Image 1 (cartoon, rainbow, N blue to C red):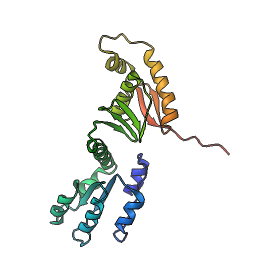
Image 2: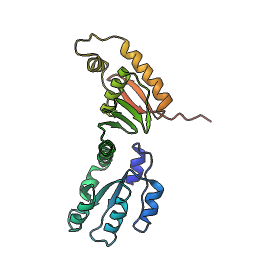
Image 3: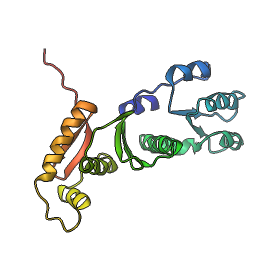
Image 4: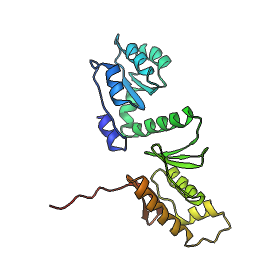
Amino acid sequence: MLSQLYCKNGAASAASASSHTSVRRFIKRHKPDVILMFHPLSSPHCLSYLSQARETGALIVSVVPSSGSISRLVESVSDSVFPLEEVLALKEGFLAILDGLVARMKFEGSGRNGYRFKKLFADIDRGAVYYGDTRLPLSPIEYQIMCLLVMQNGVPIDKREIVRQVWGPQSLGSRTVLTHISNLRRRLRKHSPEYEIECTRDGYCLVERKRRTRNR
């Protein structure tokens, strides 16, 4: 169920495996950014699976029952440990936590700082926005606007706030921001076709592009 929700919420791919699956073969096939492991109260295979997962360099997140001494052993090998009850209570909110952990891993692992919206990364250190590994060709002003949109994580930001953040508090504002938004939309269509900038009554926000189906 979590793997299905993860795909639904924007993951490039997600897969689940039972305890009988060959961990090395599974990891080699899927090349995951994050490995989520559920640990029963007692299993002789848990630490063996963890050591195999650790070899990949992926982020290891373990979910354990609130009771049981195994959590102390798992904690020493995992990057993060969560109690099972908390994961069940958070439901889809737990996916947001995983996304945040993966985003920090990607930036911290390369010495970079930034913000993430699904597959879009606003790299603060390099002054660039990436779609996956592709750097978007943005002007300095477009980069600043994209940073604001990525930082909002899908929540609309008012046009006046964009003007204030990019051109300064003394700016009276102009139609220039509309021109830059239009340019950004064209660049996203070309270089990042999964996402678009949507205009709402509350401002502008990044959203996933709706797939159009043909009527038969």
